[in-house]
Length: 278
Image (cartoon, rainbow, N blue to C red; front, side):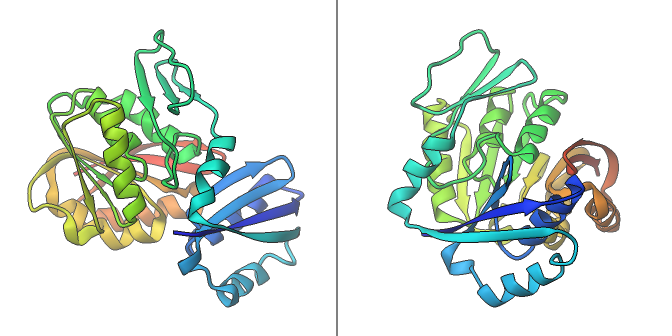
């Protein structure tokens, strides 16, 4: 799969202005963002790119602040080089160390996750992934059956395994993510992760103790009923991939329709990871 990289240069008076633009791009198919000192990079699968839709989306922000962008096509064969050049190991909560295969291990950390970047996203660098990992550290996964929706690289599924989950089903619609999850599960010697390629239609008709869903607001809303159907009453679901305003209220209202109660959330630069219970 080829990707388009859009390099945005922004001049803003308030931090939230750039965040609003990033959020709007996320709603039209951009699935990964890298914030820079002078703006940000946004990535979208080439097959999902629509110039007219992009122009219409950007029009709403032209009077709010100054920005410009350059666009580059990144062929699949070049993606590894691009991603590896930007992949630095990260530390989360003084307990988790996330690194690539080309980084040295850090045995002093309780949990180490090895991720081969490739084209699949979800390395822990984005706020949504790191907050999900923080939430996981604060909760009990021992012996639980876990569903990871929009698994990307499989990082959350791998973390669930390391936290003692008995069985994990990891689902992503992107074949590259599906393959990456299998490869990364093997890299981490986790043999209790089953990867599936698809969306809500491939969710097994079984009961899960915990659900992890780090996607985006629109997909979460679309799949909310499916999550509730397979979540064991009294157990938890973790959502991320959206902003505090206005998304958290929208997600909470939608979750309430399916018996999911808001408990708490973490926030980092307006991105949110939230815990709900059925």
